[in-house]
Length: 235
Image 1 (spheres, rainbow, N blue to C red):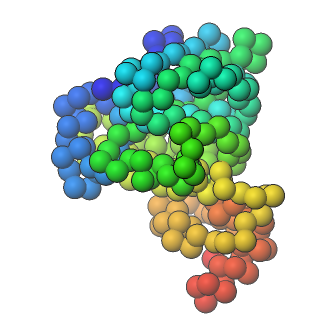
Image 2: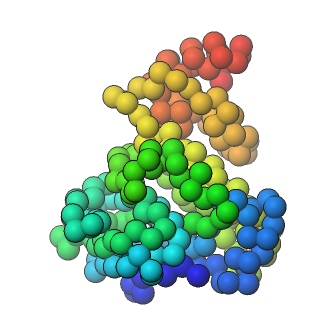
């Protein structure tokens, strides 16, 4: 069971914690046992938000994405500033503390993760480090994936709705990893499978070339040329 903060929710904020019986179902189901959400939330203008966990208290993996305002993260006695667009990944057992800036409190998405091989899914974000604070940006694709994860929740914890959340979480991590690996704003290698998975998940939407390029973390025309070269067809 994830240990979440008891911060009093502001207007439009969300804290969704999946209870033990439902987590047991996710862990037992072959479709989700490798990776699933344990709790997910969106804190808006989170004045006074602060949290501290010992290694024993941090029993799962935590991903947080600051999309507005600022705050701080402290790991191993070292405090670092967190700005809009920054992504924090704290693996299980990491002693840490964090909080919103008093003058410009952050707005952030967050998710506690569990699963048999959750570390494999986070490996592309961690890059061998014991924790990371990287800049992933606040692109429309990223925000859309966070919002889709939140909107797939259900107060009844129906198994199929939870399976949808698990699938959304996988896609979110792919897009986060792609954004976090950008070099100089332009990528030279295109992850076609990731882009196709994102397109498949958004068949009900009108998606522009600019939107797809942002998902891939590439400049628009470079993305279009690379996609055609690798697949033989236009995006």
